[in-house]
Every structure is written in structure tokens, then in C-alpha cells.
Length: 446
Image (tube, rainbow, N blue to C red; front, top):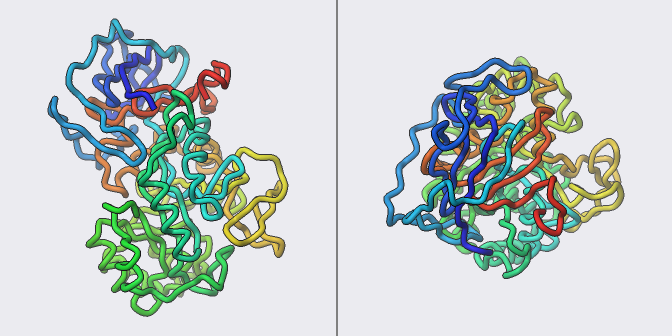
């Protein structure tokens, strides 16, 4: 891909950390230089469609720390991308312009759990990570965690190798890819009775030796691991992963409330797809779901498609979790494809009008796009657009410890999603480059 230059996004209503502002956003060398009325347009806008202005609750979330400022000589490396230089930023007046008139400019979307898209199943075809990365910008996704379901060790090794090799040259022409931030290994340390669509023959008991042998660390490309914390030696694995910089999420689990709390005490900071593949919430036995809703130390994934979760359950989660909610898609190869058979690891699944399912009816991921999840959250839970956007920007970025993503402000990564007043994606900017623009023929921009 071409090294990022400069871009001026002009005329939009921008969701900054201090609320909506009518201003331009200037990007150079892969990062945001300014989001200021002085750059172009001026004035203060109202909220999103039909909303009042909101201050202090927008993109970054109230708890987000101020962005670190990058020195002129500093560079930042991301998986599959080039390290953007920050020196010698060009003038806004000389930059190409992306018209955002009448549009809402929000931080780029981050998906913590995506198994595939556009006909590609990452577990079946780990080298297809980059095909999926090229497809995701059409749904506003600028960064993501390629998710490997329970599989043999060789599959995980191939996925890590693909991630580290970077995007094949010319694979998407001049367009940027949605940036893989590291793998999400969903398994193999899952409870057999909560495995869902994960193949039983590849499940394993938690094993610190396996983790060490395969090199599960943030440095080597593993960002997040989902495991069942009640299994023997699971907490030993949690400790080793946390020490290696990996975020650990509890999921596919029959953990009691006491076991879930012990796992959080040991370093678990996330919960995978709330209510799905876990014990049901009961007033005398709240289990993992009850702890997820009430323990402020964890952020919680939810699949807001109306199939995995009833709209009322989505509303419950949104009201209980607030800024801790992370919308995920759990998308499989069916995303962006017509109904019919889709691959899912060693299993066969079918995309229907009632979700993606195995032949026995078990839910097997989704065909949900992340922009649709945002719109669903607004419709199901009655939350504001900024709050819904935070669930796919600020919250997942905070879970991964990334201060320079999920926010629009000087020094942040130049990832932005442009929405129309209905919340549909119009354009996606990644690292300061236009990855998708529905107004331009696909041969030129996505």
C-alpha cells in the first residue's frame, strides 16, 4: 500500500471528545493533525440525527485519558501497515479533500470478534485474513481482531504467520485495509457443554505449556484469548497471558458467579458475547452473565443482531453496562454474501433469514455488520448515536489499551467513519487514506 499522505475531511459534523462540532478534520502521515473550526468550517453542531449536542460523552468516552502527543520523530507500527512518520506535515490547503457535507464523522469502528466475511472463513483459510481486511471498510470497520475458533495448532500458526507477513502487495490496489490489531483466539480452552459451534474434537484443557510453546503473546500477534475460567488450570493460563500482554476474556463457560469473580481477580478483563454460550442469568445463580453485568472491571461483548440477543436483552445490557459495552459482530464468511452454505472451520453452516446456523440449528456466528449493530443498538435500547458509536470505538480501544484509537483528536490514528443521517456508512478512512466511498465506483474506492 502507498504510504499515507494528507487528507482534509471537510464540511462534516464531527464527533469529538467534547461533543459534536461542525469542523474539518486534517490528517497527515496516518494521524489526525487537527479537528478544528479554524481548519475549514466553523461553529458548533447539534447532536446526531434528531439529537441535542452532547458534551463529555462522545467518541472517547468520559473515562478516556488525554491522547499522548507524538514527537516529530516518533513512529508507530501496526500489524499489516507501515509505520507513519509524523514530521513535515503538509498544509491543509494543499491536501486532497473528502467531502463530508451533510454527514457525521465519527471514529473508525473496531470489531473485537470477526471470524470472516465476503465468503472467507479465517479458520478454514487463515491466509484469507487480508481478503477480509480489504472487505471490512465497506461496513465502517477500520481495525479488527481476526478471530480463530477452536482448531488444531497448525491453524493458529498459519494465522499468526499470515498476520505477521502483512498484506500481499497490490492485494487491494491503493486502498488501505482494515488493520488487524492481533488475533482473537476463541478456544480451544472452552467448556465442552458450552462449545456452541466449536468442534468438540479440538477442545483442550487449559495448558500453560501449550500457550508457551505456541507463543501466545501480544508481541507475537495474539491480542485476545477467550477461555472458560472454571476449567482446571485456567487461572494459571490467565496469569501467563496477562503477563504476555494478552487480553483475556471469559466465554463459552459454565462458570458460577464465584468462579467468574475469581477469574477477574486473576486478570480477566472481558466477557465474550454476553448471554451466548454461558449459563443463563438466574436470580439465585447469576453466573458469568450476572457478574459481567455488575463487575465494573470487565468490558463485555454483545452481538446486537436481534437473533443472538432479543432486543430487550440488548437494552438490558446497554443500560447495565454503559461505557463497558463492546458491540461485536461474531461475523463469519456469510457477511456480505447471499443466503446459503458457508464454511466455519471444520463444520458446515448455513446462512438463513434467522441467522447463521449449523444443520442442527445451533447458532454459528452471524452475518451482522458492525454498522448495522450500531443502528440496532440505537433502535433496541434507545441510546444516543454517540453512545452507540462508543461501543464500537472507545470501548474496544480501551479494552485493548489503545489510547490513540476510538477518538477524534490531535495525535490519534487517522481512522474515521463517515455516516449519513440514517447511520449508514458513506465512507471509511484508514490511516489517513480513503478505504471506501460508496459515492465512487468500486474500482476506485472500495
